[in-house]
Image 1 (cartoon, helix red, strand yellow):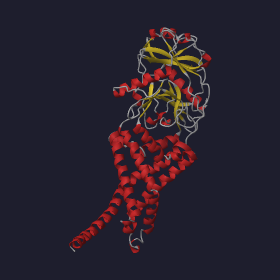
Image 2: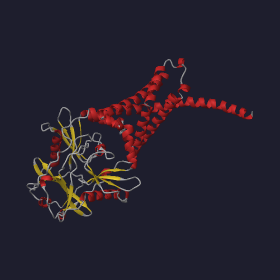
Image 3: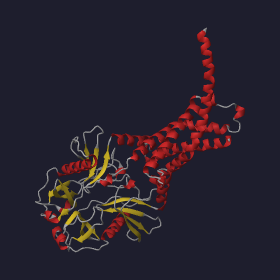
Image 4: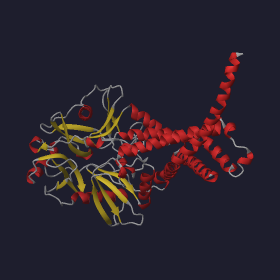
Length: 519
């Protein structure tokens, strides 16, 4: 009897508590939903615009990669050119076709690795125009566009990322070449080495600005900094997840408890009905968008500093005892020659023409779009002091670069897991977002399975990948961009993504309308 008497007050107490929780949960749902309605609308609208920007309204360009062609063997030795022009040190040298003639493109050792290269005729040894790099960039732009008639309205060398040329493009420095055409085509090209970075027209440039403002919230950095931007977005994404959870509880699991009597919902019954139905239909989508977005944004707390890592030391000209014109090369199969420093020794890095074309996507392209790929060329290394061939030079140089970068970043060099391997197309963890090809993959035996991708042609770090980045990449690809539907084709995948974003947008708009009506 005593137990029953004790249980009765507990049951009576539980009733008001339960009712208070239910009443407050509905109120909390409305408040937190109201807090995030504007961010959700901005994110979903810009998310709807992304497929338009990257797929259906993307401008066309005639060529996205240089066709592999042999270089013309210089008539004047490099040593003679350097002596003739009183150059005492250099960082790199390439043989290029400049306005129909072979030329040496030289990065001076007395200047930074990103300084404007100088050009010298490989036929006479004379210094070419002071604007030769700009002229070469315009030449490349005309090649990629296959437009020899449009006037160049502007040519600007870019050494830092801006609102139009974003960090996602990775390559610096580049030339921004604007052509006087009805479509307002702008081409970004790198000259050392020669390749296409990206291209835009007027409409796509506008889309990029809108996406950056409404999706990436770059404007927050004007108020604070990157950390402030990331933390603000994380807080709002957390509130969105909380709103989705409370909505799922109210409109799904406990709907009978929260449902109003018919006479009380006559005015807003249809709004409540559709807000509930659409909300339940896109509940999973809301979680996947917000959760994967939060994971993606969280990693932005640690800025991507890959561009800090480049190995391009100044090389004294006397080190080049053997001239590149004296190397035992079949010049008809040589695509490029440049310099590489390895363990205190300087080598000529010789890229051979590719023997075949693979079927993989986007090798050789710097825009990340699926084009016919050109297989990465074999690379050999000749000692500049004695002309001897370095055995297994490609793997030795890749390991040296990766070890150097890890030592600089972490102060230690762990043991490698296997030999470095060639990567000549974008795939898996090394996606098109990294832009650089071909690269060498160097994996290390660490708890985080650290892997570095290095670009031998420039001595740069192309990417550093560890487990947390792999998990985030999978999360973002499958839960945010719906790559699981990739087998259906990009168009179908983009349609599915847009429908999902439109559903989340509809829930937010209906919820806002419902709040206004009930006020």
